[in-house]
Image 1: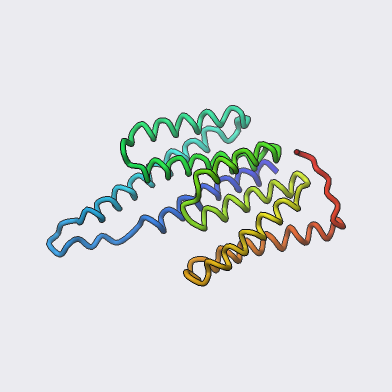
Image 2: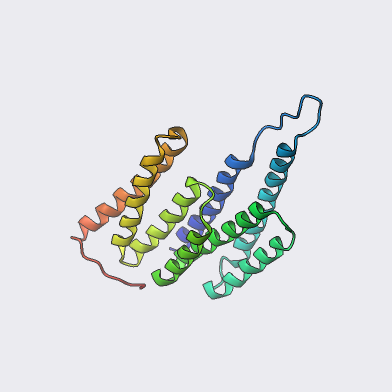
Length: 208
């Protein structure tokens, strides 16, 4: 179980980093005279900051992977404060940094905490919003897994059903980007539904 949780959280970190790469890694074209436009300079800055945040998140994970949850949260918050202190009026980067920290705390909570605690950190993340559908799917699937593990599969199923419907509506605009994400959500949803049927619909809360 501990090894499974370790792999799950590490995968979430990698997924978060990969998702940001899709957003920020754009080819620098210049203005035809070897100079970068203001927009391209900003994109390069965002890419560099993405790498910096990903590095700190990975270091925080390795440092805290055997800590109790109440011990690891201050470590992530300290990393957040350290990163934010380096930003001044970069509102987008400030928001993205807060999101990355909130995402990782949620994943760590889903690894070991009661569902009540997980709900609290999911609400924190929802207040910040999601950068893209990929990060939202990763967070929701992680939370739904904890729902199932604590005997509250119904809540996880309801969350994924709503997400599936949301992705279905968005597919009309960007089908290529969202088809794989929706498939991942539906696979997890089918597995949880099958578990409910196997148990005859009975719930046995173990971590409320």
